[in-house]
Length: 295
Image (cartoon, rainbow, N blue to C red; front, side, top):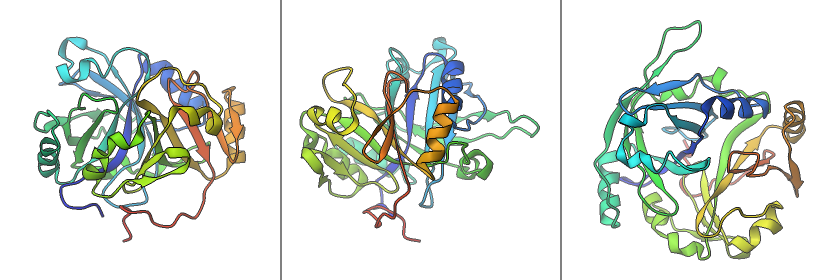
């Protein structure tokens, strides 16, 4: 478990200008998506690619988000939900969200207090359900993050919504780039665990089920075979563990989604993956890293 008042990586907020076409792309990749839902008070619509967390008290998913009414979109979300598609924030789960907000302020971040939100999921053939949560809006920094507290986490853990035709199991890693990965040591304090040196000068920040790895730009092509679209610190993408790489390849081929292979991984390049490098890796027996729930 994380230390009291800290948080762990839970999901990724991905901005998509067209929620319909984005959902269709992920379905072609072999993912099952939740129905479209709306946060009426904020003018926001989303769909989720829900996966299987290994630890209690958190979810594990990609959130595709788009505004449908910019007239009521909160000011803090205006810049987040604009421009090109891509990861806009790394969302942390903070069961003690008021304490975590205090920690953010101690670390020098300007942040409004948590806001309460509720959305409706209209599920075909079933009664609607209403996820509720407290949310801290994304902070304004190169690697944006924000935090949430769930009130009905079980809605994000439905077995039928977390089974995917391509065999996707869970997000294993968030990938980012920076000239100096150690400049983001604040994540060690927010997560409650020390950052660790990775290969080729990268920096790894353990956090529950999902770790953050910040790479140097010059190593990205060597490791993943892709060119960087922009300079400067930014989110690059994410790594998803799948039950079988053969099953994953079949799904991508069946959906006519371009991919390439690098080492023991299958990669969908950012120009295909809505601004994100999507790395698929096979299952492996990992020793519990700091922050994992051993219960």
